[in-house]
Image (cartoon, rainbow, N blue to C red; front, top):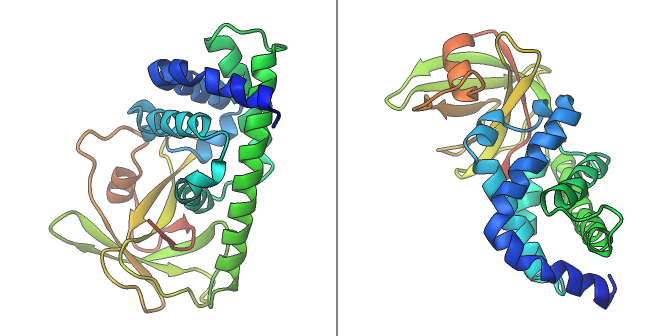
Amino acid sequence: MTPEHIELVKSTVPVLRENGVALTKYFYNRMLTNNPDLKNIFNMDHQSSGRQPRALAGAVLAYAEHIEDPSSLARVLDHIGNKHVSLDIQADQYSIVGENLLHSISEVLNVPFESDLIAAWKEAYLQLAAILIDIEKKKYDNLVALDGGWAGWRAFEISAIEEVEEGKKFTLKPQDGNAIPASEPKYYISVKVQVPNHEIQQPQQFAFTEAQQGSDYQIVVKPEKEPTEFSVANILLDHYKVGDTVQVTAPLIG
């Protein structure tokens, strides 16, 4: 990035502090409307609650504030990389995100798309995308290298459901019968389910409460206090039974 690009990005910091969430809400609505297949990746409950737009707004603001030295955000970017890998985000999807983010900045801030400001943010986004793509490629490679490891989604069968105080404990066994990596508490997996009466699937991350050392994984599913039709936990509790199949990503640290 040129010094001029850096200064232009930094000039948007006050606006992002005040209107960042409005911008990211607009961005997600725009992107998911234009690319409805991405609804299979992004948790729609987190969209409606504002959780995901708030998280993205904070990340965009932090990046703008540290645009001169993105390496200072190494821990944050590593955390984001874990979240992306747990949802099987792929490198080619970054161009879709970038296009919609740049148009959202232009439309929300009422700045011409051909302006120097949007050009600066394009360079900033390309820099950030390259960093994250590299981080995530290494994580995917590391997962595949584990004993029993894999990258992306893998079919697991629900082999047992047990009533527990918090909700239900689901035992998930790999459908292919092959090994899976051991894991520790505070690591999490993403579980993706089919949404009843909709042509989309929805993912949610579930943290392990105890070490996972066997040939299956066990997660405790707690009902949402204010569920929607897209609430993964409640879909599991109300619609899934022993013998059904879900999609699962490999364990990552929370």
